[in-house]
Image 1 (cartoon, protein in one colour):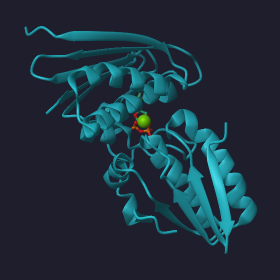
Image 2 (tube, rainbow over the protein chains, first blue to last red):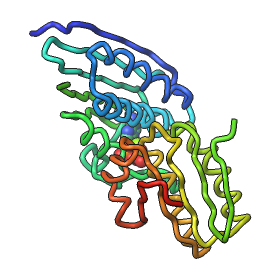
Image 3 (cartoon, rainbow over the protein chains, first blue to last red):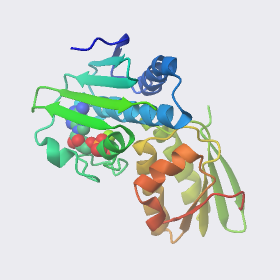
Length: 142
Length: 107
Ligand SMILES: Nc1ncnc2c1ncn2[C@@H]1O[C@H](COP(=O)(O)OP(=O)(O)O)[C@@H](O)[C@H]1O
Ligand SMILES: [Mg+2]
């Protein structure tokens, strides 16, 4: 197994004020690799999507903990793991369909997973109903 | 703190959004914008994104929500001056198929 060069772990309560904190903290960590402006904005957006989903869908009106772990490797691969212990997703592939949303307020676009998979190189979503969601995203920097 | 600034002129309402658009900020933007949109009932709504450095899919939801509200009052919506990173997410969602996006400094 290859060893990561550096690791950051962050545990945050699922408060919406922490959406900007989470993406800024990950961006500051990844900045050690001197990414391009585009790479950093892609990563911020993907992190914001995953964290927002844990807050809005996973924990809904309750407050739980969001676990974020970021690593990078010698070959400039960045691996981001974002986890919650909220309600989970019953049908992951349906949830990942662009425009699919379970939100009823009419204010969510259903494009969160599409953003994560477009802006990162690889996206894996693991979930079971009642068991929370674990997102693993990878991006290799130039 | 205000999240929006408005200019109303010749039945055109310019809504300038200030700062990041994420799920946390979208609510205040929505409330401020809807109040003035419904108050003024403009024919044209210009969503000025020149002061938005960061936007995620909550911003897409916000824009589509204002588009639907505009439809109800018979107004047209245009997006003006998005930053390159904001333009990329607008394009990913195919927003240009339902409303015009103007990149220049045109009003
Ligand atoms: N962390 C999560 N916990 C529970 N459900 C989730 C989570 N993340 C995503 N989902 C489900 O997947 C759907 C699609 O997510 P997404 O593509 O981000 O769109 P949106 O957030 O706009 O609904 C959500 O509406 C929700 O039902
Ligand atoms: Mg989402």
